[in-house]
Length: 181
Image 1: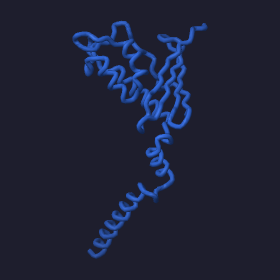
Image 2 (image 1 turned 135 degrees about the vertical axis):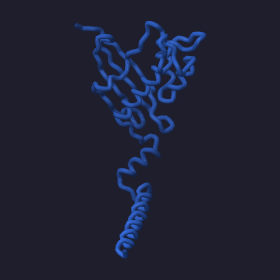
Image 3 (image 1 turned 45 degrees about the vertical axis):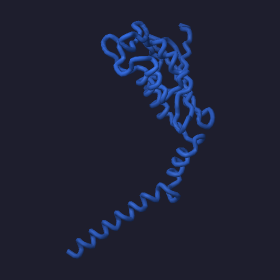
Image 4 (image 1 turned 180 degrees about the horizontal axis):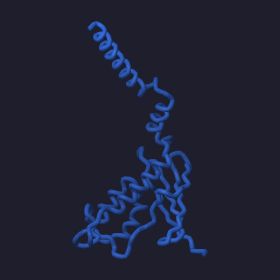
């Protein structure tokens, strides 16, 4: 019984020591890796954007630009282009969003609808490789070349800029190349 009390006290002591050490890792005594992350979060110009995070932002951009619709093409959660643009604006510039929304949506008395013959297919293809590079502090460029039966050859370019601690898509271009075959 004496041994079990000692083991219990040792376990409790170890738990207290480890939790105290865990608290100190967020301060000055943390490893270099933790300090790098903390400084990246605190210094807007130095905050890094990974290729995976850029791809994730591109996927979110597509998801937000193409919200759920019913069988008639009516957008379920937005009634106006302005509402949709404001939602996507959290992750992209309005200069990027407006032309796309105006191309593929129309407002009717009943709400916001996909235009019947318009479908925007110029999004990142996740399984294809990309060229991703830092242009300057807080600014990155992602480029992807695609060749599909529907769209032909095209190069997608997205530029991400750090604003108020978050990366946003500030430029989004699709350059179609002529078919040289």
